[in-house]
Image 1 (cartoon, rainbow, N blue to C red):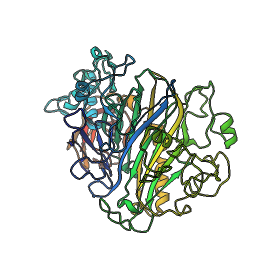
Image 2: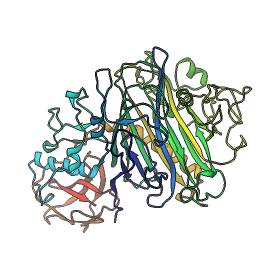
Image 3: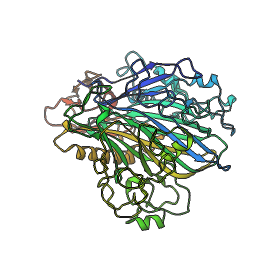
Image 4: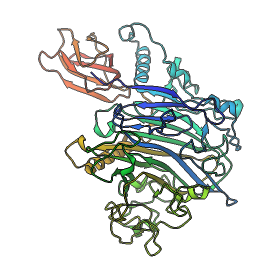
Length: 598
């Protein structure tokens, strides 16, 4: 029996300008986590005010308190414009909904109230919808697969596909597949939402709905659509990962130079007072790990002696400025600097592929700061502090240096904190050979940790569209017999490969059936349908069955078995819940039916 997976909504504390702020909960796999209508990730604004990234799901164990998007740059008048929110209880830089596209990038309370929500999506409903319209389009009966008829899911009708053009908004907002090609989102005609993952929470927010009361920065005019998503996969790396994708559109009139984008993250790995943090330079990741051999109770239960590791991976950053060349993945730092390339594949997308000016930046800097009022390395309190932390600087503008506490004027400057042995080409120090740097070599004591992973610098033009993609990857010692670090490294490698192969454009990939079946002249029966584990096949005795294939709604093969003499059952327990096509191939042709797995 498969685990039942749910998405549900929670309403919590009021936010300035709104009656209530709305939250969704993503429960797609081994992780359960929150997201708000203004883009706040993970933390729970309810009565408990506890961390909101729970792993394993339903265990009471939490590994992250919260995370948020930071973006800043310098306009032509040399004004710093930045949106960088930490805890919304401290202030607010992000607001609900889309902006106008006339250069003013404006909104009002009515629009923000209308978009003060999240949209929860699941692939099983989309698969059923696609199968229903596939059967209709091919003249096949829907009675057996949909004996009670078919109704479009309510959430399809609520999908924010179109903005209000009378208010100056973009006509196309959330992506959808236009089944009939008329440009209008109409689910009753076969259209359906496009999103990433098997379970997804979509949210829309901007930085122009009010003052930036957290960072204190000047507004930019950013309209952002976010997708927090996960997979109902049996693969360990996907089962312990959630992804977030940001579609970032500059609706304002300001050109920003030296723009930096990144993610702020407050790690709370079980008991948060005994954490260390590190950067894996080769993998483009930061992570938190336990600073001793036992994770004590903190705000929530600790992981005890079964230690855990929580990572944040930058999968894709913004577009690099055009230079009319294909920037390389270089063999060394000098070559990378000369040709504006990278030395690690994880540090960008589109490098060395033979295409000019399609490069997306990767992890450019990582920064840890202390939870105190230290004027160099403490909490950010004014706009320039946030902007400096998005680069390789301390909040007072002092360059991050390698080793000890990162502030020595006698040490070499660097991009990344606590890289250990993960930077064999010394990219962080611009080729300068240095000793491994960790929290242990720095003489630090374990404690509560906050970190920023960022990308840049680049030029952000009015009307320009960028994407940011991150993955939150978790590992625990009990997961397998490998050392914890090896398990984590393998999962990050698998997640990055899967992203590049399957997910980089997931928000625009339609689900279209493509089974390549021929039409026979026979009928077959399957039961039970829906099925949990064992599916029974009844095939006419005059036929010689050859194989059975189950396709998902994208035409991908989920199961392929060759018939053996007397075989009349197949086990579908490894297939995620959803709607599929089952195809029986025989010596007289092939036939297809809809199959529902629960």
